Length: 332
Image (tube, rainbow, N blue to C red; front, side, top):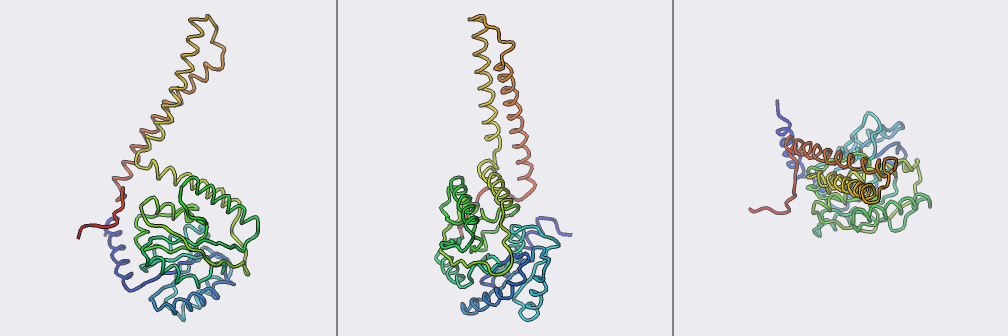
C-alpha cells in the first residue's frame, strides 16, 4: 500500500506524463445549466479545433438537478475529449474548479463559466498571452451585460479586494482565466476562493496579467450570484490575507495584538495608580480599573494563543510537504 507522499508522487508523475500530450484543458463548472452545456461545448470545440492544439474539455457537474449531466453524457458518447466529473451534491463553484484543475492534464488550463456569458472565441487570446511568458491571465469583463445590482456589488467587491490584496486585476470575480500547469502545485481551493486565485499566485511570485474579454447577457437558466456568496467571499478573503501574512509565524499577529492590549492595560493602570497615591482619588469603583485588568488578561491570552498557533503550524508543516517558497528556475 502506498503512503500518502508516494501516492501524491505517483499522481503527479502520471499527471505530468499525460500532460505532455495535452496542450490545453478547458475546465467548466456547471450547476443546473442543462440548456447551456450543449451550445457551450459546440462553441468550445469549434474554437479549439481551429487552434490546431490537442485539448480536452472537462465539465464538472456540481450536483445539478436538471438535465445537465444527461446532456453531457450524450456528448461524451460522441467525443471522448469531453470529460465529466459529477458531484453527489452541490459543493459550490470553488470545489468544482478545484476538482477540474486536479483532473486536468493540459500544459495550459483555462477555466470559464457554463452560462454562455463567457465567449469561447477569446480562448486563443488567453493562450497567446500565456505563450508570451505570463503564468496567469485573468479575464476582464470590460463591458458587462449583467443587471445593475450585480455590477454594483461586483464593483464594491473588486475595490475592497484590490485595497486589501494590492493586486491590479480589474475583475478578479471573472471566472474566465488561463493558468500554466505549475500554478496548481500545492494550491488547494475551498469556500469562495476561486475569485482570489490571481492574488494567491501573485503572492507566490507568478506573473499575472489580464485581457479584456467579451461578455454576453444570460439567455438560459438563473444566476447563482447572491448576497450570501459576497459575504462568504469576503470572509474567505480575510482568511487568505491572514494565511498569506502569518501562516509561517502566527505569533507575530497574536503576539502583536497581545502586547498592545497588555501595554494599554498597564498604561491605564499606571494612570490610576498616580490618581490614587498622588491625588488621593478613589479608584475602586472606576470602570477604568476593570478595563485595565481586562486588557492585561486579554493580552496574556492572545500571547498564549499565538504560542499555540505557532506550535500547530510547525506540526502541520512537519507532517505535510508544505512549500515555504516557490522556485521559478533551478540549476541544470
